[in-house]
Amino acid sequence: MIPRYSRPEMVKIWSDETKYNIWLEIEILACEAQYQLGNIPENSLTNIKNNAKIDIERIQEIELKTKHDVIAFLTCLEEFVGEDSRYIHLGMTSSDVLDTALAVQMLDAGKIISKAINRLADVLKKQAIKYKHTICIGRSHGIHAEPTTFGLKMALWHEECKRNIQRLTNAFSDAAVGMISGAVGTYEHISPKVEEFVCKELHLKPASVSTQIIQRDVHANLISTIAIAGSLLEKIALELRHLQRTEVLEAEEYFSQGQKGSSAMPHKRNPISAENICGQVRLLRGYVMAAMENNALWHERDISHSSVERIIMPDATVTFDYILNRTIELVENLIVYPENMKRNLDITQGLYASQKVLLALVDKGLKRQIAYEMVQKSSMQTWNDKIPFKETLIQNKNIMQYFTLKEIDNFFDFDEIFEKVDYIYKRCGIVN
Image 1 (cartoon, rainbow, N blue to C red):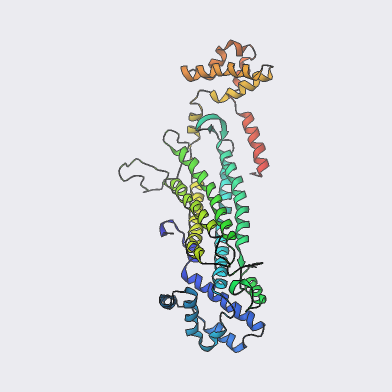
Image 2: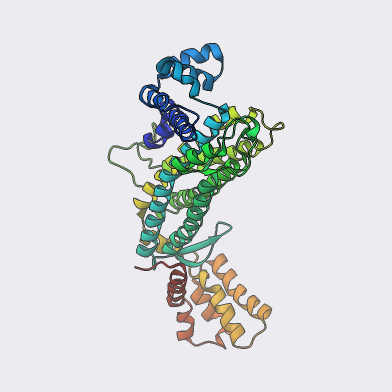
């Protein structure tokens, strides 16, 4: 992922330096396990631990000739360790290092992502509480429907965020699988105890069964889960983009001092963060297909998956981490305009109360379709003649034979909405 859409903390996990250091850690841990099994002399282990070093430029130089990154890495170690290097990589195959290291990197990426998504949940909860009773119009099909509260939007996102936290926790845990089982995964040339030791030290689970690689369904599951979590970020950003439109302007991204919205029009304040988030979630969805196609390989393995995941695993985690943190900033610093929410609520001159009137007529004993037609007549009069809905109700003799003027007034209050919002919040566990 390009630096523009990356955060250094996550990028570092996928750097060559980090990767080679993990490879070295795996190889040394394997040597320690082999020593415990009596397969490596103590002085040789000491030499390996003291002298095995990483020289990235030298590894890259060797790889130009070998066309094999693990062999280049091992050759570099040989140059530092000398004769005892024959004990390094004993009974192992390249994927023992590659796949186990990838699991460590994913585990580390998961820790960063977990911290951020829990932070997002906290911010959403805070905003849900702040705007719990901030009334605004709810929309279906993009058309005014009935009143809701701005806080309830946040509560909805908070609840989905909690589900994503659990999904991601499970997916990263499932992907935390290591393997030191040798060619085609049969342990023919290495004891399973080496794998057990290495995985324990790296906080990984040994793969119950493998071929020459860890099976890629766990990676596909992780990428899919990241994409699902990304869809929440898109949902938030898309809603806020709509609410920032000039004609709506119920909420707006924070616009910092000195920020510019357009090279041509000095007045512009654009929802660039929200648009960026929506755009990058498209990348996450694209990675899902590639990850799924990585699962089916020839026989005990080929390497058609390798080039793909060298791109999608870093990019998916780096991109998701970036837009996750950008969403936190977007929500936390959001500018909210309750007065515009009230203005927009009143655009239809009270038509949001039509269902209240309908249900009240039904409660009076009318058949639903008859009551519907009566209310629709007044509603269409409001639409067509721009007369407030309360007035067209009062002018409708068929309706007014069932209601007093006080009952008509009560159709336009929000007390019942607030009461039910309190109920929803309690059910979601959102409390002050």
